[in-house]
Length: 165
Image (cartoon, rainbow, N blue to C red):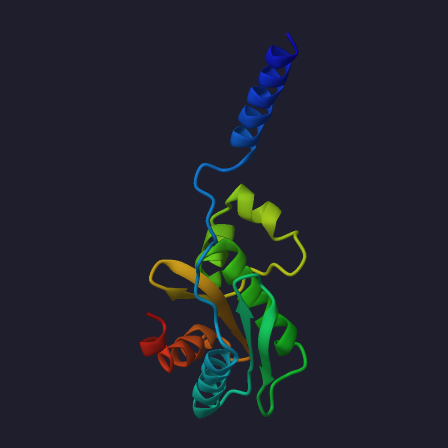
């Protein structure tokens, strides 16, 4: 009888271990933005806006929404740094441009109306996700060039487009 009890316990223990372990446990592999790529994008966006006559702030966040680069250009207004950060954070968090996000808010989307009450979320154009293929690895936001923040950010992303593959 002790053999049966011991065997039964071992079988139950083995089964419990098998159920607890994932069937195919493996590490996640993904690309991340480097400091140099983030800096190049930010510098490109600031330069593009400056050429258009605007002083802007630009922020690049990583896949977790944490700031990698925060850059305030010459003549940028004080509020632009926070707005740029929030635009990048929002684009990264909701995996879409803030221009698209703002459009959904203006159309009365009830989910967006609730989301904008979250800390750091903003529905103003100027934030764009950074992608490698279909994977979003961060986002960039600019503030200070009314109506052309998106274009400045796109110019910054274009500076490193060959590395985002």
